[in-house]
Length: 131
Image (cartoon, rainbow, N blue to C red; front, top):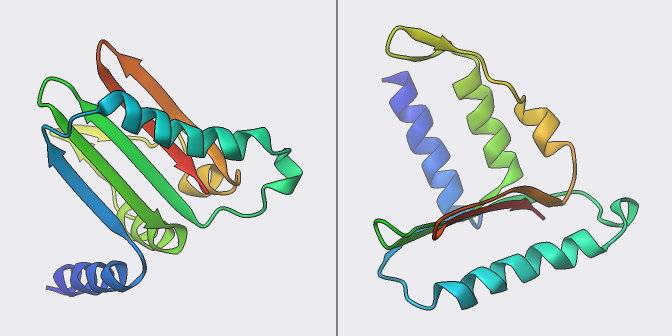
């Protein structure tokens, strides 16, 4: 019950904190939309690291061509830290196999604004950045 209340509190905070999560089926015009998202990343990447300042949000852009689905999310970093703290305090496992996170959330978030992940496979695309 305590976890449920905590999850509800986080969801309520996310709703009021500029957090967004969208799933679009048959989104159309994927190339243009990807180029627009990539332009946001390039704008950050062109700046010298020392001029980028602190990151305040994580943005995720995922296109699954097989499902013809676009998933986008923007989450404030304070919320990411709060959720990660609660979820990484527990043991992680898949079936009987324990998982060891290879990257600590603070290492990732401490890097500042810029590209985190860009991956493409066939027509699928993933783009994750901090700003």
